[in-house]
Structure formats: C-alpha cells, structure tokens
Image 1 (cartoon, rainbow, N blue to C red):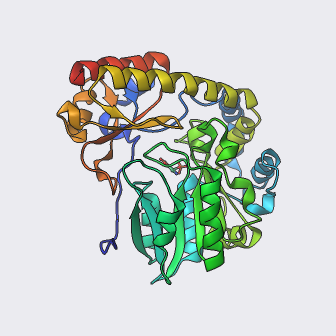
Image 2 (cartoon, rainbow, N blue to C red):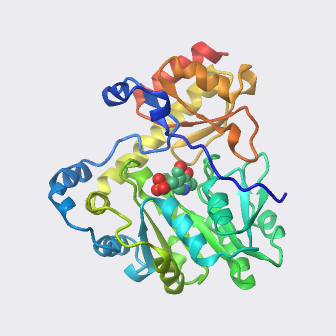
Image 3 (cartoon, rainbow, N blue to C red):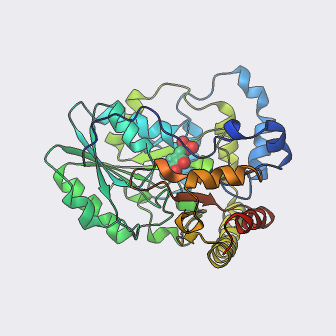
Length: 369
Ligand SMILES: Cc1ncc(COP(=O)(O)O)c(C=O)c1O
C-alpha cells in the first residue's frame, strides 16, 4: 500500500508533560509506562559525570563527539571511530541518513507496525513510503520484505528488536535481507535501539557487520539503555563511505558536552548492563504472567523491556484504557496510531517490581478477568 499523504506529525510514548504535573513526576507518584527506558534509571556513574561536567558548558563541545566515538569503537570490536556518527538521539541519525542518501522519487520500504520516524525521515527527504505488514505473529520474515522490493526501492528500514512488537529477529533472517539488498544496491537501516535489553544479543545484532555490508547503517539509541531520554544520545555505524555521507550533512556540535561526558562514563559500567538484563528477565516474566492470568489483556511475549498488548477483550479501546489508567496516575502508550494496528493495541514498558505491581493492581481493577 502506497501512502500519498505525508506524515507531518507523529505521537510517541513518554510525553508526560501533556499528562502529568511535574511535581508528581519528580516525587515518583506518576508512573510512565509509555516510554521504553531502562527500569533501573540512569547509571550512577553517568549522573556523577553530569554533575562534574557542568563547568564544560561554557565551552563548545567536541564538534563530532570524537572521544565518544573512540569509546564506542573500543566497546565494539569490528567497528572503528571512522565508522561511527554520534547524534542527538537515534532519531537525529535516522533523519540525517535519509537526508544524505535519499532523493525525490525514491521509494522506501518499512515493515509495519514499526517505529514511525523511518516514514517521516524518508518522506522529509522526498521519498514515497511503501508499507509491508509483518502479519499477526509479528515476525519479520526476509521473504515477505524482499518480495516488496521494486526497481525504485532505495532503502529498507528494519527495526530489530521491533518497536512496538518487542520481537527480535534472528541474525540469519537479517543477513538474508542485508545480502539481497546489497546485491540490488538498496540501502538498509537497522535500528538496534533496544538490542542491549535482549538476552544473547549476539544472535541478533548486525552492528559489527558494517564493513561487510557497504550499504548498511546500524542505528542505536543510548537514551533507552541508559535511561537518559531527556539528555538525548544515539549513534549510527556504517561502512566508511556511508558514515562519511551522514557526517557530511551533520551539523557541528549536534551533541552537547553533558550528554557526551555522561555516556562515556555509562559505557564503562558493565555491571549496570548485567543488572539490567537480570532485572528485565525477572520483571518480564512477572508482568507477563500477572497481566495474562489476571486481566483480560492479550499480552504478546517480548524479548525486550516492553510488551504489546491487545485490549479488545477488556471492552475498552486503547484510548479509553489509557484515560482510565491516567486516573491512577499511570500513563501507557495508546498504539492506535501505529500503522498496522487497530485502536485496541497498547504498549506497556517494564518498570521496577513495586511500579509493575501498581500497574497490575490498577489493570485488575479496570479489566480484571
Ligand atoms: C526503535 C526506536 N528507535 C529510536 C527511538 C528514538 O531514540 P532516541 O531517543 O535516541 O532518539 C525510539 C524511541 O522510541 C525507538 O523506539
């Protein structure tokens, strides 16, 4: 299906400013289950670096985040600083990449449902976007995607693990798509913004393959894993020619000095990553079982830190359920605006045990069954 109407605006989770009194956000009495950030909160080392770096704000930051690029390369054998572009969130990189490489009349493919900014970035660059529904099991299949490629297809956007379905696609399936795209001269963007939340991520990630696939650009948000969405930071990795193209259109100083310093420290904190995975394993099970057994939600199992759920058996639309939960000072993501989902789908992120239990209690009251 080819969409004629450009998407000028999109909604996202996490717009707490629209729904909550900042005092309640500050004292923790309003719970945001709509944005998918690490339930542990930011690493302490990152917070300390932020406090200790305030003196830097009277100087320009490094224009291309060079020392951070070096730190990222050190953590990821197989990629070098020259493969990396650091951005003001992964979203900036998705837009810069489209701006650098796409032209009026090109076609972009996006599986649906998926993160909506790929469509916006491609449309902003003059592309027409073709959607490819991934089907009710939410499985990204190479054959389904590749059947959609046409002579004017210039780029395929792949989100792994996918938002909002929470499913990770195995590397073999990704490789089929990357190999075929490469042969046909089609660019690929693989968004691995939630990959650090996945157990055994090496079975899924294509980050270190960027020198093997010249047209691949892997994008990663660091605001999710380090719970720093207000600070904004992400990076993209590609072959040197692709990284150079993105760098060519990137404004200087796009990432502020505080974000650069905080993330450099966060990257050193290996224990934080292990604790994140351990917490997610435990809480994913707890929340999934409690919601599946004691509410009328149909919850889809997930590989990451959020769940997609179908609310139709509760008798509420996603919008009505969101409003009901707001009365309990809880915000969930109404997924009614995701292409490929109808107005009964919601997304719930995983938080701490006490917070998850508050959500379970509220949902039992509203939609127990
Ligand atoms: C798949 C995906 N990529 C990127 C982003 C945005 O990341 P950032 O905050 O780093 O711009 C999101 C935010 O929800 C997302 O779901």
